[in-house]
Image 1 (cartoon, rainbow, N blue to C red):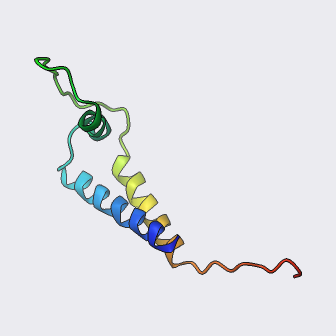
Image 2 (spheres, one colour):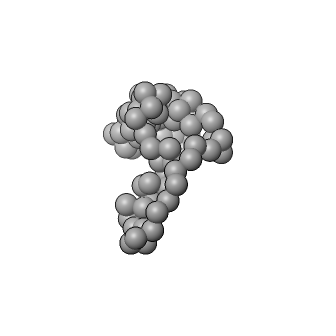
Image 3 (cartoon, one colour):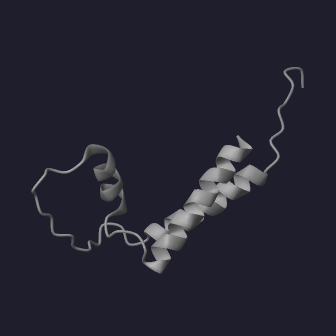
Length: 82
């Protein structure tokens, strides 16, 4: 669980860094879905910036901090008799 949480935190930091540097496509999630599903051949799409989610980088950075903190936290299991 620790490595999974740490890995998600690192991915969130990388995503936030790319977002703040302006190296992500305008609509990152749509581009990711298009890799799997594909687009119609011969169709042209106009990409325009939207204001649907302005704080994407801040949310990714916050999630990265939370996941890294969870990976560092020591989880203790209680015994049934205590």
